[in-house]
Length: 215
Image 1: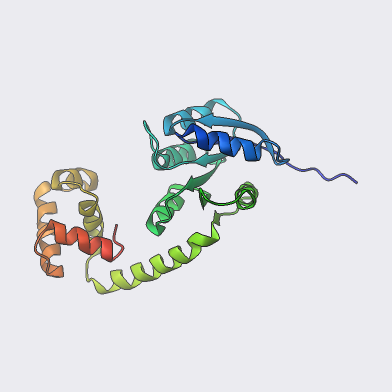
Image 2: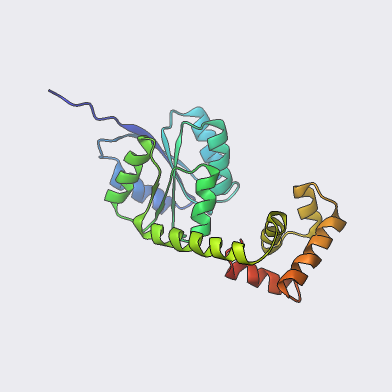
């Protein structure tokens, strides 16, 4: 009795041709891979998933035109059936969480081996989530620290949100537009936050946000 082995159409999105060539080289003869397409930036990846038969995308983060994060969000909005595996050198837990919230199905590191890459592809194609073992401890520590810090800083959810935007370099005007508030309201929030946390300026607030996992 013969067993059917499914095979998938893959899209590799990376702005480094060496990475694309390397991944193609190790995957082209695998039974679970049918065809391999490539994209050199996020917009190219979006266009390819809309015009080609793609089952799974291997997504880099830092790419020109449209980055991997925005591309992941757009692809998941337009084609939620397509699986997205983020492949990056970045191991920061907050980045992993950000991508998972955006809809990514898996997050693995670029220095992972072929076996783990194939495992990730098989997992997501079976509608499972997957994160490299190396990242699991980082995620656990990050979530534990964030839980402790947010319960002790006495900031309201709105204030915590504003701290994150300030730490990411947004001006009062930009924050006001994003949150549909007046600029004066955001300025009041900023002053109240500094007073609550006994901080002198924005630089100190950014440092506090980084140390307490509020980014």
